[in-house]
Image 1 (tube, helix red, strand yellow):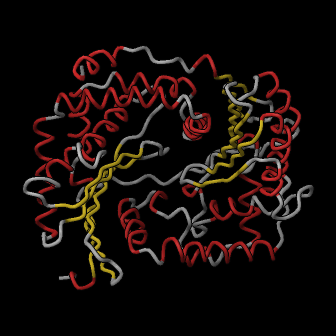
Image 2: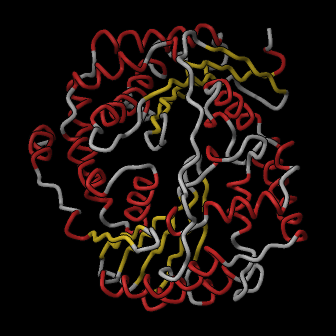
Length: 441
């Protein structure tokens, strides 16, 4: 029966996404997407700005994340700190997040409250009120956040160092939260300059998903966002290109707070491109086959069982970047296993994969898993809003998003093997070990 299911499931039709998505653009440049889902009387509004940590001016690292915090501080119509409380009082919730390429704000609320949250979101796009006291207080909050989430966490510091080593010239090498010494220098002038430049309708994508109709949303959007003035001549800041990497970079970090060694390796990798997502789809398979499952993936089978070398291994691929992606993998050696021995064992697994390619049954199982995941994803309106918003913020189109599930299904084992041969090149990798202090030798 299991073999029959594996044979049948890949041919089940995928549900169409195109019928539920409507998009239009206002005269001021605001791009709007409406995703209809009438199963529950709820709605999600997500506003994505095409600016993130990679767009910050030199010396101002952390300003994009800093401004995400400041957006909750009040406008000429909303009291400082009252934004989230007003939404919570209506039974909703809200939050925000920052990446290297975008900053996004969202609210989840009853559908008949959409007009209210849309008015509030539009209000803070152009009418935020900032004072020196507000900026100074929030700067201290962010410094404390960095202390708790990064400076007190050896693995977070290690990941930060790895990324800085991976990108010698491109701003993807700076941390989203910012370097501490540069956060300390951020003030009201820098914040307002960033805000007035990038927080504009012609730099934003609005996604509304849930129990709505396109006509009703369009009327609300034109009423609340339509009058907002765009930033004249706004273009994304040019980013310095990363020079070709010619040799592997290696680093070792020791910390007294570390209990067990950790190996991490990252490779520069292609990202999804408009109209050309095939290689990115193959890399999704590659990461899953290598280390996407703690028991069935290749690294797990070869390193966790039998002549075991590791207690834990992993692999992942980030295709969401605008300029560059990363394929990352690593392991935690078993107690008593020398780090060099563990890394050698991992490299042997990679060499075998490059030579032999994907195992047919594992590949077929993964293809069925991706098809099932796409069907289940239709139940998550928030996830759909995120999927479309992130893609458009990174230069993809609605058509690219809708084509992605089928692009995944068209990947062949040969595609995966070719992608592995291109990306798994040690000359394009950064390899790092995080070690207990006593293991420094």
